[in-house]
Length: 507
Image 1 (cartoon, one colour):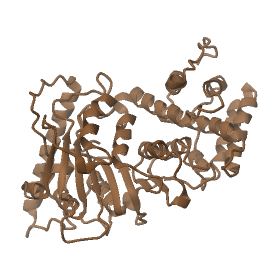
Image 2 (tube, rainbow, N blue to C red; image 1 turned 90 degrees about the vertical axis):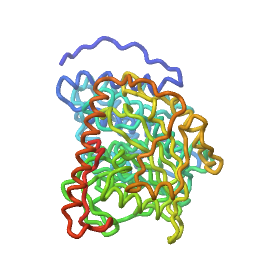
Image 3 (cartoon, one colour; image 1 turned 180 degrees about the horizontal axis):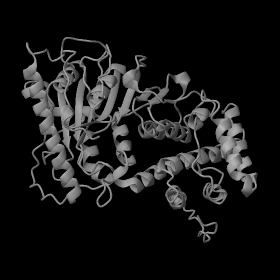
Image 4 (cartoon, rainbow, N blue to C red; image 1 turned 135 degrees about the vertical axis):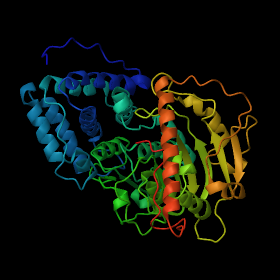
C-alpha cells in the first residue's frame, strides 16, 4: 500500500448535493482497503462510527429543551481525541475509542459500537477520513446531514458489491411504502428483520416531515424496535441515531436476535419489513403460528401478524410464492384474508434489487381489526400492477422515484376511501368473494393493461434469473403436491405437519 496519494480536490459545498458528494468522497477511499481484502461492510461500519462521533461533536453544546446526555459528550470527546492524536498514534487511539464506547451495550451509542473491530489500520487513511468529515460537515443550522450521508453510503456499498450484495430496497421505494403506511408520532414502529434499519429510519423521516412540532418520544407512547440477527444490527443502530432518534445514552432500538426463535412478543402499531426469503433448516416452534413451515417468508409474515397490535397496520415485501403457493402458503393466505383487512397489493417489477435482479416481489398492506369477529375482515383488495409492461435493472435502468408517480396518485395515501380503478386497468379492485373463491385462494393477480405490452428488453441475466425462478416455483409446486398426496388422511390446511418450499425464494 502506497504512503503517498495525490491531493484531493475541494469538496463541493452546495447544500443539496453535500450528502452525495461527501459519500462519494468517503467511499472512494475504500479502494485501498479492497486491495487488502477488507469487506465493504466493515468499512461502511467504520464510516458510520465516524459519522456518529462527528455528529456528537456538533450537538454536544447545550441546547434549549434538550437534557444533558453524558454519552453524547463522551462521543464528542472521542472525536476531539481523534483530531488531536498524532498520525502515528491514530490507529491506537481509534481502537481504544471503539473498545471504550462498545463497553456499554445497554445504551444506544454503546450498541452501535459493541464488538466493533474497525476496518482501518492505516493512519494516513484514517486521517483522510477524519479530514473529509471535518471539511464536509460544517457546523451550524441546516448542516444535519450525517444520516443522509450514511444512506448515500449504503447505496454506494450495494452498487459496489453488485451480484454478491444482499437485497437492498432503494431508499425512495422505502420512503414511498412508508408514506402509504403513514406512521405518526405516537405509533410504536417495528421491523423484525431490519437489516441496516432503512424502514425504521424512513419512518422517522416521515414523522419529522409530517409532524415537525410533535417529534416521537417515549412519553407519547412511541417506541422503535428492530431485530437483525447479524452484525448489520450495529449499522442499523448507527443509522437510527444519525436520524435523531433521541439520546446517545437512550434505550437500544435494535437488537441482534432472530424474531423467529423468540417467544417474547412486543405489540407494535406499525410493522414495516422486507424479510429474508428462502428456507430454514428446521421450522420454528411457535405456538402462535397457525402453520408450521420452513419457508422464511411465510414465517416472517406469521410473526408480523402475531406482533401487530389491534388496530395496527403493516407493510411487508414478500415473494410471489406467498401469493400462489399451495399447502402452508394457502393456509396463511386464508388466515390473512379472514382475520386481517388485506386492502392493498402492489406487484413490484423485477430488476429493482441489487444481488437478485430477477426476484419477483410484492408489497402487502394489511390492518388488524380492533376486535376478533366471525365476519371476514377483508372486504376488498386493491391491486396496483407496477410489473406488467415495465422492465428495470439495478444499474442499467434502475427504478426511479418518477416511476412511482402513477402508483401514488392511484393509491391515495391517507385517503383510501376515494380510490377508483384507473382507465388503463393497472389499478383494480377485487372483492373478498372474488379472492376466497379462487383456486387455493390464489392472490397471483394481474391487472389487464389497456395498452399493448412492450417487448421484453431486459438484460440477459435478468431474463435468465426469471426463468430460473419460474423453474424453482414449478418444482416447489410439484413437491407440495407430492407431500399432500403422501398424507393419509389428507391433513387440514392448518396442520402442524404441513410444510412446503417457497416457490419464489429470493435467497
